Amino acid sequence: MFSEKKFVECVSEFETDFDWQYSGESDLLLFQAFASERRTEIDFTSAIASTIEHLQRAAAFQSVHSYLEDLIRTAKPIHNYCNNANLTRMSDKEGWRYGSRALADWVINLLPAKAPAKKLFNVINELRIKDISRK
Image 1 (tube, rainbow, N blue to C red):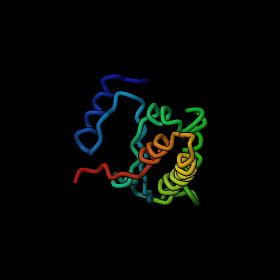
Image 2 (cartoon, one colour; image 1 turned 90 degrees about the vertical axis):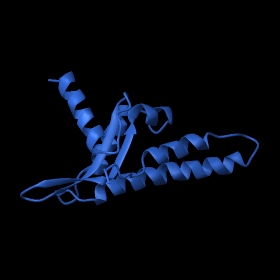
Image 3 (cartoon, one colour; image 1 turned 45 degrees about the horizontal axis):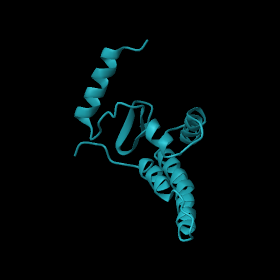
């Protein structure tokens, strides 16, 4: 069951421990995890931190549900263990997808008609890996 008190405590703890601030929207935080038989470690130095609403405004996807399903599918561990390739692979996949669209829009912008390349660059920026650890 959702607890507003626990949610606020969790947000406060994250904002204190990491270089991240709650946006008030539907924040999307993706981290790499390394699992062994004894423990699991989360790497906060290579995270993707964005919001669903910002990505939606930038036209990063058609449907929130299909986008989240795609993220889950892409992030599934390879060979049944967690490794750092999954988050990087997802970031690269999204970067190439939107980067190629942005390049195409840039070329189109050279012609008289204008295209929204800036939105695509915003999506690329939102989906890039960032270091949110406290240094």
